[in-house]
Length: 163
Image 1 (tube, rainbow, N blue to C red):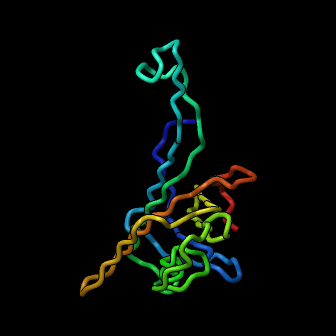
Image 2: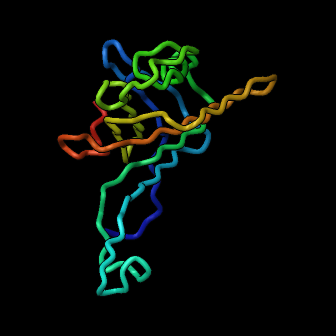
């Protein structure tokens, strides 16, 4: 494969917000979507390398998550209200049941970043970070950050399935 400038094209952001499990268009971002792949590791110390005070003898891989940051300048406010509940199927402006299990309680969302060349499907997303929403005489912007987790059975964090 040749080294080239990569352009994914217009990123349409869709989210499965409940009910019919259909994807709904949330909107379009200011400068695309920032996708950060996070790895989790555990240092394994042994006496061979000085125990806890020395360098790790090995490093154990513990999986990963993906952080998705989106700054919208064009979005559907009704769809925004469906995800600001943080709990799939919740009511905007109303805290859900304290103690709800997100994955075990089916409270996660599906998020799709659809582009002409490189679509991304995140089957299990939790919107756990703060939302930013400005209101005033200038156009409103919406910043949403989601964290994608691996499916407990397939271990898939993301794929290209957009249907």
